[in-house]
Length: 204
Image 1: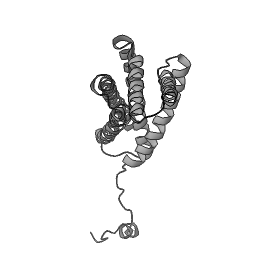
Image 2: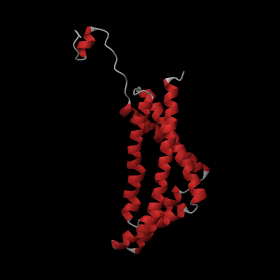
Image 3: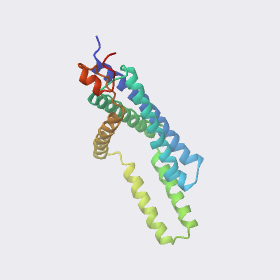
Image 4: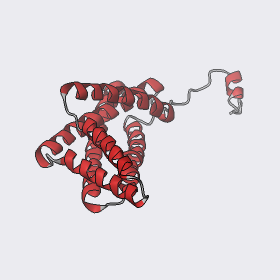
């Protein structure tokens, strides 16, 4: 018979695959939104990324945590919640990362360059509207290029560092979410004092 721990791990992995696919789709949508559907600087740099990569995934993560707890019977302690949520987040990271690498390699090999061009054009346009000097614009563009090049670096060492940081972040988030979503079943009181302390009528 399947133990509770096995049930938690299995359902966490399933939810992680689902979350990973959703996260991947959101990332692809963000790429096309930024490169094809908008030229607004704030939509490109803040509003779009914040909404699609932070706020929406946060809402989905909360829903999937509730769903995971429901699937395993509605109750789990802090340790069990941490284990399940960490597995879910870890699988999410693996699925979305592998999917994103496949997308950028097979479907959009110029993805990094397109993103860089959009960010540079958006930054340049915004700074020109504000009347910024050309020298300052050039320096800002140079910083944007360096930042984008660093993000698109897929060397083994860089990817290994990124994976390590991602695992640490996933674990910290799992601890936070576990503290929020842990739910243990109420224990029956063994004596009258415990019942009275709980605010119940001991004669019932």
